[in-house]
Image (spheres, helix red, strand yellow):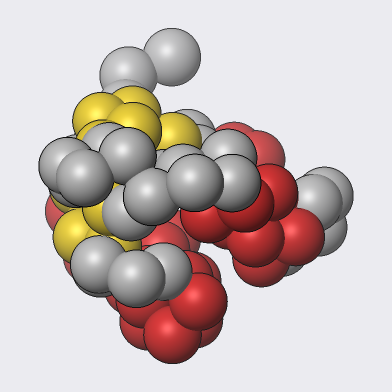
Length: 87
């Protein structure tokens, strides 16, 4: 892909290591993408039934881990956006 001469941001990506994971980031880069805003998947996708705030910690930590991996692949960087998601 030719450099587009400008940053290209995907502002809402649910990155999932159990599915395409970093392969999806590599495809995004190949198509000219430079930056990602990675939104955590709902807790129940990680097998977490949250009853209180602390229960979301493993979900948020997984999001941050994937963001770190994505930033190694991107010409720009990835940033996490984590919040509890109601059912």
